[in-house]
Image 1 (cartoon, helix red, strand yellow):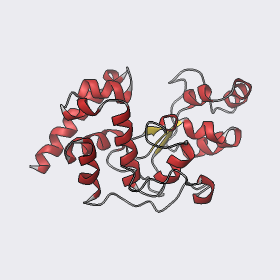
Image 2 (cartoon, rainbow, N blue to C red):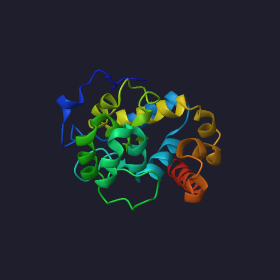
Image 3 (tube, helix red, strand yellow):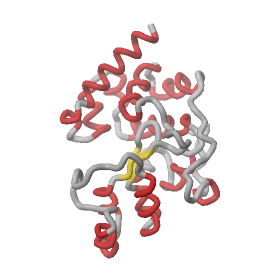
Image 4 (cartoon, rainbow, N blue to C red):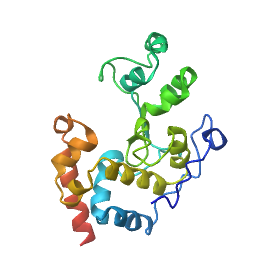
Amino acid sequence: MGRRHHPSADLGTVMTITFKGRAERLTDIDLPDIAAIIGVGDAELRAVIEVETSGGGFDAQGRPRMLFEPHVFWRELPASKRKGAERAGLAYQKWGTRPYPKDSYPRLTLAMLLDPVAAMRSASWGIGQVMGFNHKAAGYDSVQAMVADFVDTEAAQLEGMVRFILSEGLDDELRRHDWSAFARGYNGAGYAQHGYHLKLAAAYARHSRIAA
């Protein structure tokens, strides 16, 4: 792994406000190439991609798909900054306190004024929606390096997702199509409430038929 990975990248030299880079999509070669690293076919990775981001790693503006999580921001912030972030509507203690906006980037931009690293660690990024605080599991020394790669290519996003799956020991579950166990590890204990395992199974079945 790491063909497109440059952990020394400086986020500030790539983008400061726009979160826009090259925004290159996956090619016909990228997906089977990356799937081979984890020992699965295209259909397994396409299933995860579909459930996480409806099949694409960039939004209509060419930014990585991103969801800012205020309850994670509360946890990531030093205690001295939490109340101010809460008053600004950027942080709260429990998930689900408020609905998510359609676009998380305005929230992220404001959160970065308080604490840029904590803000980026509190968002899920790219084609696999890897949380910023999981940057080491995704193969990056810092969240800044991860985001700097993710603004450029979906291939880098997918490699980060695969590295995370390997780091968390979920590759066996993915290979044997144990969607409940995979969803529990990838999406958390509330996976069943959101039907992630059912969505993954259905997406895999559909992509397997297409491949056949």
